[in-house]
Amino acid sequence: MAAGSGLTAAADASLTRTIAGVTSGAYSTPANNYVACYTTQFTAAAKAGATEWLAASDTAYARQAMGATGTGWTIAAYASGVGVVWNNTNTITQPAVTGTAQTLFAIGFCDALTVGNINFFSDLASSAPVGLGVQVILTASTGVVFTTY
Amino acid sequence: MDVEITNEPTPPPRPCGKFKGGCHIQLVEEATGKVVNEIYTPDYVYQNERQTRDERKY
Image 1 (cartoon, rainbow over the protein chains, first blue to last red):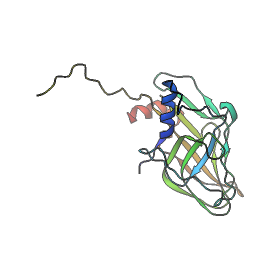
Image 2: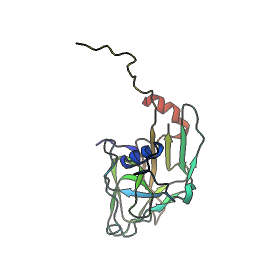
Image 3: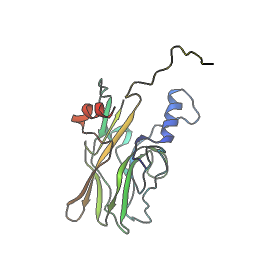
Image 4: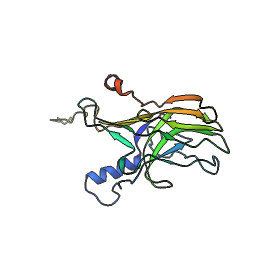
């Protein structure tokens, strides 16, 4: 399946309803963004359905907060021909894998520490093994870069 | 019978309403600090190469 990135299918729908002024099913502004790891892709076609790592398998696993009220992101002004570029302000580090080795196939950005909604994502082209004792790290400024255009 | 269509809609210019991005992921051995894998997801674009790559893509 082709790797995708961007808004999830659910966020496509809720944001559209929000800008159209539809209250039901509208988007809810998150208090924070949380980075999550997935063993499968969202895919470019479905933009949904990835399987998140489980704390029952990687006992140290937990979604990592990016920074409340948008502070986790540095958002540039719109530039012609480029759009709005935004990237992670801080380094995000997942605890070292403990218990069972994992496979990383996508990164997701959620609106809650557990459950909640997955708002946007980025698939890897191919899955990567993450062994015991290994951390998934997104370096400040360059670990995550998105463009709205 | 063929129907003549006037002012036929044209495909939207690209990029249009795109929301894309990617990650530069480092897998690091905690005990040693060694980077064991460095992964760029397909839609990751270096900021200083952004425009060039976008133009190539579209």
